[in-house]
Length: 94
Image (cartoon, rainbow, N blue to C red; front, side, top):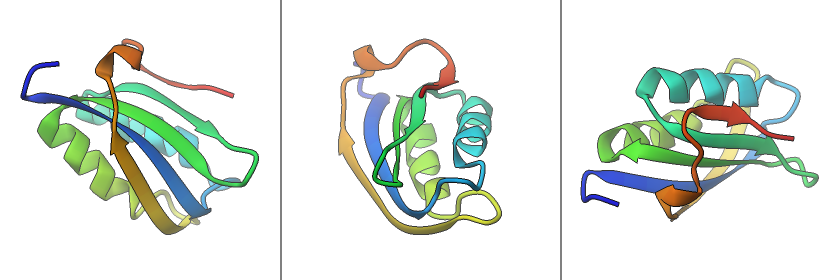
């Protein structure tokens, strides 16, 4: 990964399921030119892998705190990840 590309594995908690959080994440990620995926977890959280230019990843991490209308984000926890794990484009997984 070059110094201007980065990847992050993100866990978002709060009221983040049943509010179109995954669709919103995909739209925001595509708008920012990010690769990766997003999925619902059985504990009510949402997990996402985002990869792309450093600035775009940082912006997406900030956007997660707001989320779509109806969401109430309690926490956004992220850790650095390998961009190799991110598929080209952005998709919702189950």
